[in-house]
Amino acid sequence: MARPRPELAPSLLSADFGRMAEATRLLREAGLKYVHLDVMDGVFVPNVTFGPKMVADLRAEAGELVMIAHLMISQPERYVDEFAAAGADVITVHAEATAHLHRALQQIRAAGKQAGVALNPATPLAAAEEVLESADFLLVMTVNPGFGGQKFVDGGLEKIARARARLDEAGRDVRIEVDGGVKLANIKQVAKAGADVIVAGSAVFGAADPAQAISDLVAALNS
Ligand code: DX5
Ligand code: ZN
Image (tube, rainbow, N blue to C red; front, side, top):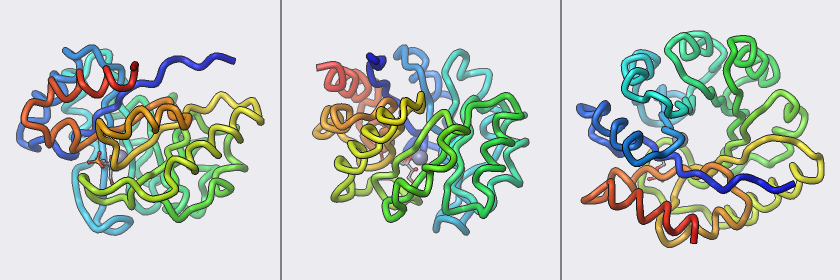
């Protein structure tokens, strides 16, 4: 089955938090499909960002952009309904953050949203195996979550390739999202390994000219 071409999903984590609407507008004007929003609670990860209000406040500016809420929070099921009400289109929870992963994914779908399951670098793919039927996205973390600007982990490409092979074998229509350490130098390899949606934070908003960085990354992706 032919897969659609991979898409870039910039993360606003490295953007100026005082100008999130502008950053969102830039992605829309660049004709991108996705925006990736990193929600951190200072418990599951050692950093704190923002909550559902940021998603709600960016919803109008996002327009047709698919808003992916990447919840790096403990017991994410406590907040699924709030992020759904705020207007997130995809809600992603970490397998490591909940004792009830299946229930959390069901809850996301019951709220009418697409469900994502995220795995830290140390977590084997098997942690998501039993819930693939309830997932629309499998997010493979290629850094330890918490901060932008980290290095792509060793073995990351191989893990993406293994995820791709398992999903294809099982005939599952689950998109693979890859998050962390993606730059101009490795984005093509990440796509080739099997990613469908590729997150880039510092490579976009850490650049002197984010619009140029987006067009360079998209060109590399399509090369
Ligand atoms: C890390 C976040 C990522 C982050 C990626 O915890 O989940 O989405 O923004 O940033 P870069 O692309 O700089 O690694
Ligand atoms: Zn993320």
